[in-house]
Length: 197
Image (tube, rainbow, N blue to C red; front, side, top):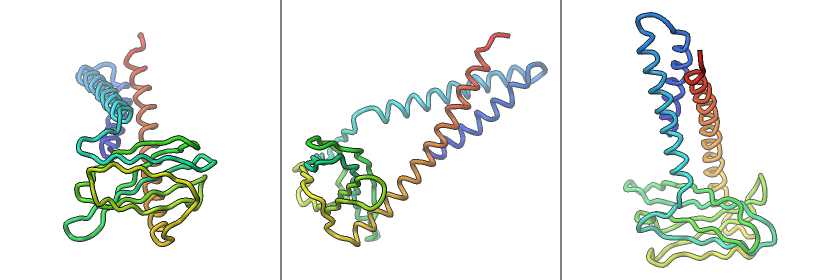
């Protein structure tokens, strides 16, 4: 998504510059480029919004239900560990969000190349207050995890999880900045296209 957002940013900036070309031989081509860029931008954001709004259900996936039994809302992350062909580990971080007491959240994960995942919980910013490691011997049985106490099963793995979550958070912040910039430029281009002379 990052590369697409960067290309869209360049197109929207070019489109803004081309608004200065009102007369001349290339004015018609400039207007076609501006309209195409705005339509493309609206299409990308419509697709992204739809994709992020629909259910996370995946076909042939393992559903994991996380139930918060603690007295405070906890911000949970799931980290799925993939066994790569070269015997290294690939990590996929998913943010479940804050789960209030006595509420639950369901996450769907593709576990074809994986037999393990970690669950990490935070009260706020800082160190985790909950970390558990879960193996999945049978991928046909969905997982139910009740978080009843503050526990860190492995300090070393919790530190690894913390670094993975920090990297994912930085990536999401960077993506949010690009999305905001593109939406502002898209709005400006749309206004300039629609304004009356």
